[in-house]
Length: 212
Image (cartoon, rainbow, N blue to C red):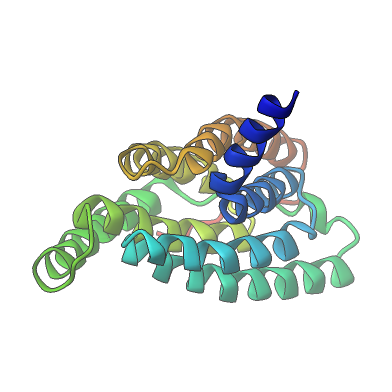
C-alpha cells in the first residue's frame, strides 16, 4: 500500500496539471461552441491564458502569440454573441455560410502569409517547427474570427488545423494536448454536422452570403 501511494505521489509530482486544466477548459470551449452556447467564450478566455504560458515555455512562440489573440477574441466573441442574443431571440440559430470562392481566395492568401512569416520565424527566432507552427497560427486566427461570426465553414478549417497541431504536439511531448486535439477533431466533425443542420433548417431566414 505504501509503495502504491509513493508511486502515485511521484506520478502526481510530474503530471502537467496546468496543461491539464487548460486542456479541460479548452475542451469545454469547443463543446459549448458546437452547441452554440455563449459560455464557450469564458472557457476559452481562461484556457488560452494558461496555454499562452505553456506554449512559450516549450518554445512554440507562434502558438503562444496565437493564444494572446485568442484572449482578445474570447472577449470579442462573448460581446458579439451577447449582443446578438439580446437583439434576436433566435440568435443561437443565426449560422451563416460563405461562398466557396471566398474560402479558396482566403486559403491562398493565408498560405502565402504562412510561408512569409514561417521564413521569418525560421531565420530570425529560435522557434521550433517554424513553418508548421506558423501555418496553424495564421489559419487559426482566421478560423477563430469565423467562429465569432457563426460561419458554418469554421469547422472545416479547424479539422485541418487540428491535424497539423497533433503532429507538432506529439513532437513536443505535450501528451494531454495531443489527446485534447484528437478530441477536437471529433467535436469539429460534430460541430459541422450540427451547424449545417441548423443552417439548413433555417435556410429561409439565413441566406447564403456572397462575400467573394
